[in-house]
Image (cartoon, rainbow, N blue to C red; front, side):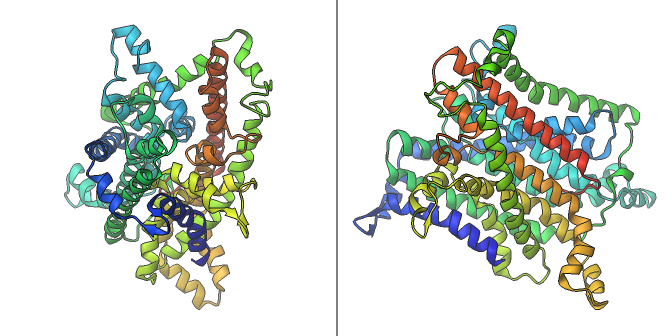
Amino acid sequence: MALPVAFFALFFAWPVAAIVARGLKVDGAWQFGRVADVVTQPDIRHVLWFTTWQALASTALTLLLALPAAYVFARLDFPGKQVLRAVVTVPFVLPTVVAGTAFLALVGRGGLLDDLWGVRLDTTVWAILLAHVFFNYAVVVRTVGGLWAQLDPRQEEAARMLGASPLGAWRKVTLPALVPAVAAAALMVFLFTFTSFGVVQILGGPTFSTLEVEIYRQTSEIFDLSTAAVLTLLQFAAVGAILAVHAWTVRRRESTLRLVDPKVTTRRPRGSGQWALLAGVLVTIALLLVLPLAVLVQRSLDAPGLGYYRALADSDGGTFLVAPIHAVWTSLQYAAAATAIAVVIGGLAAAALARRDAGRLVRGFDALLMLPLGVSAVTVGFGFLIALDKPPLDLRQSWILVPLAQALVGAPFVVRTMLPVLRAVDGRLREAAAVLGASPWRVWREVDLPLVRRALLVAAGFAFAVSLGEFGATVFIARPDNPTLPVAVARLLSRPGDLNYGQAMALSTILMVVCAAALLLLERLRTDRTGEF
């Protein structure tokens, strides 16, 4: 546990504390009175209210639309299932600025809905809510569906043989087992929408603003670090309180589950009800997830002869010191390093948290591990530049700075993916192996590893995909001669001209294809299946 604690203290707590101190310290003295001044401002109270209710609404809408898909992917077998699973996951790892722009092309002025029916949603909150569902659909599908696929159906069948109705058997047997996974998925969706940045900035315009957008505006446009520091503390406190309550609630409901191979739980759809459900899920995925991606690809092909793609190999010496296409190789290298760090840190943390004899201090660290997902990425990136700029830890010119920032986002996914599986492992197996003389390393290799292998592979795949799409912190620390794909896309979008916009769409399409290929490979590599992600 020491290594994960040291990692998060050094590369998360310290940079965040540094940026807060920079904003609230004047001549060496803390100015906490500034907190009350900021909170009592009417526009800040409006931001706090909108941030909270839109996150709740986005979470409810995502669960409503994605839970049927979780069942379909968990229990039904149909052609193209693995490809469709990867397609569902792609929006989650796309840079928000790209997806926000693609969504605007659908629902904004001159968009597809405007052309066909004269419908525009870019001036309403519905555009933000739908875009949030677009991003977080995969969180529910993979978190809940993964566990659902491994629940032993014979327990529900036994309840029905004892006289329970199908709904009653599901409510009393399956639902309690799924509650921790549903709660974990809801937590993730709430965190991502509570701290939403790119989507709200593009689709919300001047009308809607979340805490994250306001922190960015105070930092980069108004240069009011004092107000930005107060807002960071507010976001930090809100997310910390929610995570603490959630961790306590989930732990009370968790129990050892009897997991089986998903191959024995899936079957071809039977009956009109299952076929109708499958059709409804496919239509939802086509309209909500595939259509925006199709618009993205179509715009990247607007130039004749793949002109936008061929232009990526040219270095204009302006925004980029290298040709934009080099961002692909740079992103792959950074994401691979970030994945290795996230798997080590997150795996060790999950193993410590899964121990039955873990104390309160260790269990409390469970909630703290999720804080990097809830704290402003803008704050973390800016904090890196302020805190890690002096010996003995001067990393400003080091390439490792970007993978470290990306690993902060990837490690919580590793923990959330592996923790439920590790906790579901019957402790008596470890005890029996230890009694027979196996060393702790051999117990882990012979007992735990075969059971969590799939979770480990999935965790690594998700950490890799999330690292590829990380933008908020990377934009502050990526070097001009080594931009990542999201940073390169954002720089191209910020420049006028059809060629820059087309190149941004082309790079976004490449990023989408790379993520889809990685996820599809992951689906094929794994030989067993389990709970989350």
